[in-house]
Image (cartoon, rainbow, N blue to C red):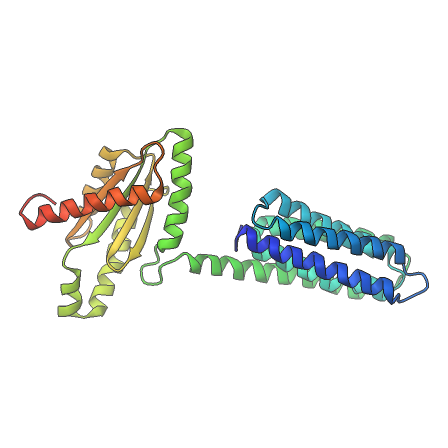
Length: 312
């Protein structure tokens, strides 16, 4: 879920609260003598209760609850369209539909957001077609097209922002936050299945000298070239990230210590730049911090070995 479940639940609570307030205003100042005032009051109470529940449980709300809340709001929009007393009342639901579509596009995967918008348009459209007023079809079609278009635009923007937030701008690799989040999920999977998982920390030797003698442009080019060469040697399941400066990290699912060493040999042969590496294979009960701490200790053991003339 893009943006985090807590943020999604908090914004959904706000949408429910605003909807409740608008329903209450509509009940207090009806547009027509045929306005379904009792229904508006009932929807205002439902929206207020939903807002309170979503807000109170925003830190513990699971994806299924978020989907259920979105579906419920779509159904309520359809109900309001059906019971609207005027054409303006039907068309006036457009902003709510647009807001709900943009919400799903921002917080949910694109395919899921499209499904939610499709359900919203079907429910709202069925309610509008069953409503008593007429003459709103052109405006309603415009609203429906707008919902679809804005959902697609927001989905693409959210995907780009999500990728940018997790990508190191220099090398195009996963940045520290994205790498740790994905590796944490991989570690949890390994703990459940018993599969091996190894992490490696790779640190360039003499990188400061490259920057000092050849300039930072040369240093940046070296980092980019290493990222490209190393990535070409990895499997799709492996995750290479830049941890900062001249330090890289590798997550190697379904890989034990021996296979990790074999991979590091291939990485060394892909580029002549000198670097040191440390590895750690997950043990039962390991946290990611503990795994990285052991890999760091192994890295500096190898660096000390290099300064005394030992193997890399």
